[in-house]
Length: 114
Image 1 (cartoon, rainbow, N blue to C red):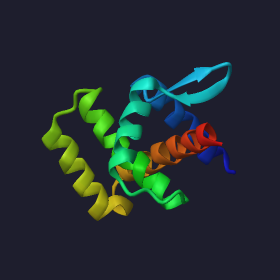
Image 2 (cartoon, rainbow, N blue to C red):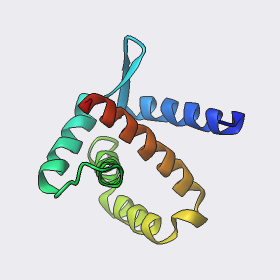
Image 3 (cartoon, rainbow, N blue to C red):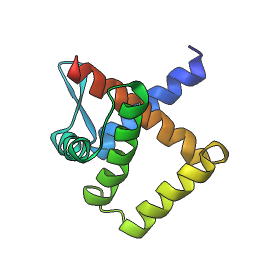
C-alpha cells in the first residue's frame, strides 16, 4: 500500500470518528450505536445479499441517511449528493472520499459480523 493511500485511509478514519459514525474501543474500530441502528434498520428493509457489493451498498446508503439524520444535513442536499455520486462518482473529488468512507465502514461492519 502506498504512503498516499495509507494517509488517505488514516484521514478517512479520522473523519468517520469526527462524524461519530465509528468509535474506537480498546484500539479496535466499531460502528457507533447511532450508525449501527441506521445500518440495521436499512438492512431490514433491503434485500441484502451477504456479498461485498451488498455490504458496500448498505454502508453507502447508511452513510447518506446518517448524514441526514444525525449530522443534520438537509435532506435535499443529501439526496442531491447521492444522485450526483451515482452518476459522476469517478469525476468527483468527493466521490473518492465517500468511496474510502464506505470501504472503511464495510470493513468495520464485516468484522462486527465475523
